[in-house]
Picture 1 (cartoon, rainbow, N blue to C red):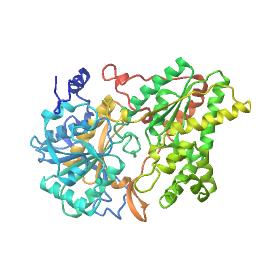
Picture 2 (tube, rainbow, N blue to C red):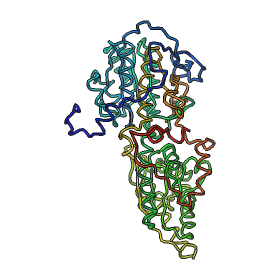
Picture 3 (tube, rainbow, N blue to C red):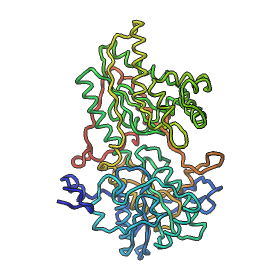
Picture 4 (cartoon, one colour):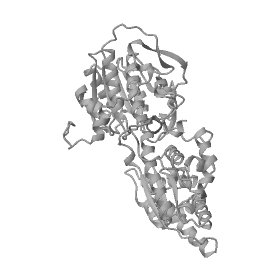
Length: 538
């Protein structure tokens, strides 16, 4: 059976079953002809760079509209940035809602990300094709990309494409950078007298696109459950073999939301939260000592095995590492990368930090640079860094008679396998509702808004929908000598409920091996195992 447009081979039974399984919609979205968007609370806004879209109020979708025929819409949609499970459902929900508002409405997909808008590369999306992608993973329907629409030439090219297609709406599905660009494009179009309304949808598996209205970005739940299945399996293996420490690095360079969610899902012996490390101003050495202390306590109890979770961006949360990277970026841009030349030029704390690292990590920091001469932090294998440091510490403690265990470590990185898998039932319904909401915002002529679906801990039928002004999420940051608009990444709140739950339980996980086994994602069966929201949303 070859049902996909690109004839990639047999379609699995699960694909076929998921295609015929319609996601649940919130009750508010059951009859679009009765809905209208009403202003609610005014939002703080950045007026300086957004005079045409600043000061807008949040919009809430409520019942109470009329059954008058809605106008025909011509809408473009683009996938921007890395993959996140559920993106196809956003597009399908958008398409179905537009057709419900007016059966003659059309949806155009821009190909391979924002560059498709600039280059005028698109195709019309139709129902016969879209049904093949319902509840599927990936972004392969139209592709994605990381091009930013920000230069005068790019903005003018985008406007030309939008006007040629006579679009009255453009939906940008992306993360914080993509939605910052959505605000810039919405402002530009309005300043040029273009009637197209730009609406964003919150996407990123990292979970760092959040606000009072955006409780979580889509794809986060699927990624965390995918990783948690693997972590649970590793926990069971550790408990069975009783001879390895598993150091598991998880996606999340700018925030530790994934590590926190997976820790709550699986109960590892230790999980390091980057935001807590930063708050406590721990050094690289102190973080390694914290890990070594847990291993030492477990060795005293006769346990030479365990599971340790580390966020991908941990090194950038550690103050002395952050300072070291900043100094290296300056020194290496214009000078030698030999350690004997670099060390004398570093501040004492930065030099101590570099010397505390294993030789292979030192070499990576000094030699592996991007085209701008900057250290490629994302390529540093943090799990191997700490395995090497902890191993040295334990050897020293053993020589001092302070450690008598056996340390055998296994490194793991859980990353790309969580980005393009079948979406969980939560993400499927969430994304479907986001697509409907984007259509309603376009219909309400909302420009410079991001769609939200909230109340996610409640049953799907009770979810609320609306739109928040993008400028309410934007602040100005100094970047290379100029002030640029940026949606601030939402970090793990150390005062939040989720972290408090984690903090109240983690001491018991050190020794008790209270591992939790979430198992694989379930798509069919009781709601208790198919429809739960992320634990960090409860």
